[in-house]
Amino acid sequence: MSLYGLQKFLYELNRNPRTQTRYQEERAALLQEYPLDEQERAAIDSGDIGLIYVLGANGQLLMHFAAFLGMPWPSYIQAMREGVVRYGPVRAGVYTMTLGLDEKVAGV
Amino acid sequence: MSLVFAGICSHAPGITGRAELADPALKESFHAAFRHMGDQLHAARPDALIVVGAEHFGNFFMNNMPAFAIGMSDQYEGPIEDPAWLKIERRSIAGNAALSKRLIVEVMNSVDVAYAEEWKFDHAISVPLHFLTPKYDIPVIPANINCQGPPLAPLHRAWAFGEALRRAADLVPERIAIVATGGISHWPATPDSGKINEAWDREFLQRWGRNDKAALLSYTDVETYRDGGQGGFEIRTFIALAAAAGGQGSVQYFKPIPIFAVSCTIGTMSIQCRTS
Image 1 (cartoon, rainbow over the protein chains, first blue to last red):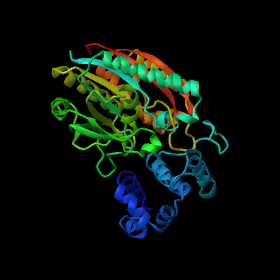
Image 2: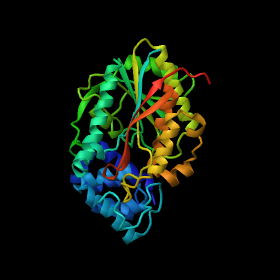
Image 3: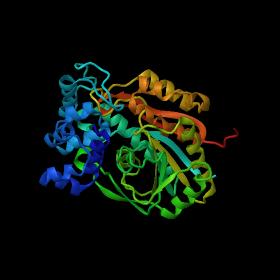
Image 4: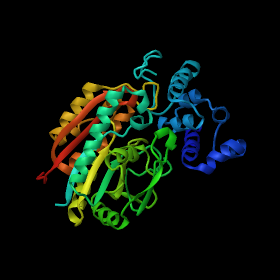
């Protein structure tokens, strides 16, 4: 478990165009530079937004990764819900889910 | 006295980024109120605008997280987010490094603020500027209160930061405006995005409007997290503004808009000397 490293990666990806290019062109080498466990590495590699959410990544970091991957807003919100269904409740941090799976308060 | 304008506003990225998903009339009513606040800001003829935001890992991360920070540059850039996502074009924004330095030196007499000669604005500043200064014609001095990465500064320190900004503004010859941006209750960037505790928001704004220091500082983070979500930690910016302005607040717009994830809020506060 290296949530800090996971979030550091997202922070640098969000703000650094070179990191974004490297994510596309040499992802394995890029991810080697962060202290990630295998689950975290796989989640980033496959763009598993639901798992990254459940692992406890700060939402302000994660939502831009979802946008970077081309996910429209409703798909991003739904991916987090599906992550909770598949992997269980959020394990760390303050971006927990407090509503039911079907309570789409904003319509998405 | 050189503080000439004080106000609060929402900054949620959905306000611009998801505008097309909102009810058009509702969206336009809020955008119009936002622009009207900009008219009031310009009428005060400020030489600089301090924007007290609650940024979201645009510049500061948990490797070295300042509780409070002020920008000290002649030039900034924003938004840091994908412009297509936020629907605000990226551009450079004028600052005033010399003025920043004078303000920071005074603030440091009571608050150990970090200074930053590099700062990329995220939505906490870029969304308000989009409406308040669409021509980007007022130099901006960005300020930040950490509301994202706990541990967070206690509320009474946010108050002290606001008081320090006021003292600093009063000491410089320039006309200074200050706008604090943030949400009240909200659960952004979670599946709950759009959840809003309207009663809690209204209670907070009543305390803010009468500038009730004791009531504003009585929230604990446990209570705020329970009632206002993790986004509720941003009440720190509105509290700092109350400390800076010292007067009575007037809420000019308040409406929960779930697709924007917050109670959309516009307010101004009269500027008075504090005696206590």
